[in-house]
Length: 277
Length: 252
Image 1 (cartoon, rainbow over the protein chains, first blue to last red):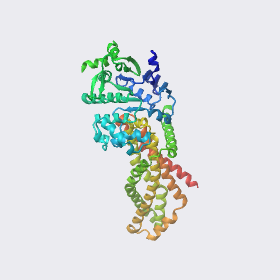
Image 2 (image 1 turned 120 degrees about the horizontal axis):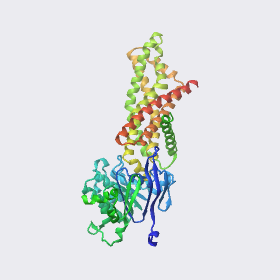
Image 3 (image 1 turned 90 degrees about the horizontal axis):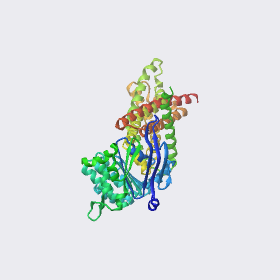
Image 4 (image 1 turned 135 degrees about the vertical axis):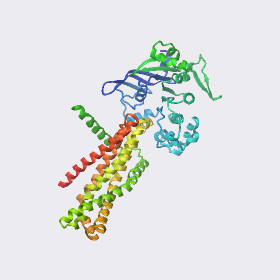
């Protein structure tokens, strides 16, 4: 490891994390993962590979059976729920299906982190909420309820909520699952914008290789307001890493080129998807 | 054998832990006052019409049943006393609690269950809110506050129902004798157990509803299962506890 790399801040480190059910079946089996500041991780894997469980462990929503979790340089494995609240305030999360509160309006949903964490009143939070919703092109939905929005719109509201408190780490769980390709690409474009605007470390769970491909190869140009291909020699290219999970284990970690070059039939499935589209 | 016992013991342990955390949260900041008011409206005001209806008919049917038995002994004048004691001690608290269990334990379990399966509870934790403080404690406070009040309403309306059957309909007794008997027969012991029971039932209804809601797994099917279990378990515990409380008060 170079000197420059050692100086980079480790945002999240999972060390030998395992999670087993009472009957002994393992959901996660010795997972190791490190996320460095400014890095983007694309976590690929079939359904049931343990991707979401790993996310929930990283957020302290589930307790691992064994292993250590380090977030922002501190060991948080044995943290109590009240201590986790402080750690989680630096993490933005998009849950599968958005995880929006049905009983709250879109404005209240997006304002939730500000109102609950920083004790702002809804009126004080309003300008930031409006801006965040306008960023995801949903500025007109403030008074609506999540049930009145489409799946893609709910996901966009989730992205607005995840980023509103300016977190250092952004976790997106299956942001494009169940969406048509056009909506899915729009969502990925928003995630790229979010990544570049906030310079946050991001992890994206997906079962679509295209999502990772877009993240690894494109950047947002604020002048033309469009995505553009990252030049081959740009250091930005190296910041996107791919992780492939299978049956609760990390079976691959590397760059897009290394993923493409893999001869493992399971791993190459996630790169072969690209040629299918 | 041990495996059969394991599940109910684990559930009971979770219930106690939830009760402990929900109760300690009552005095911890932040307070979700608006949530408490909202739940009081849903549980208390929402259950009021049906409580009045059930209270009225349980008093009326009690007077009807007693009319035959009491006339055999020539003691129809005691109908006010019997209606009042039965309603205040037992029928009022238990029927109201069963009603609220059917209406609100199921409502709470399905609401929290849906939130669980759509990851809203995880989202709440991830966004820095303790779901027990935000969801369970307001429901516990609201039920503990409104169920005794609903029971008082049910008791009173029930005595009116008994009056309408005993005096205008069957002419078993006079109006003043009915009310006088009903009033004088009630002792502090009756009132105490008549108000302690709804408080205990309120804890059971709200926490069982919340527990089964929060434990929900397995998608929409799981929500249905949690709802059914919440109502069944709450109803059974209402009967068990009414027996235990009555047993204690009989000896006092």
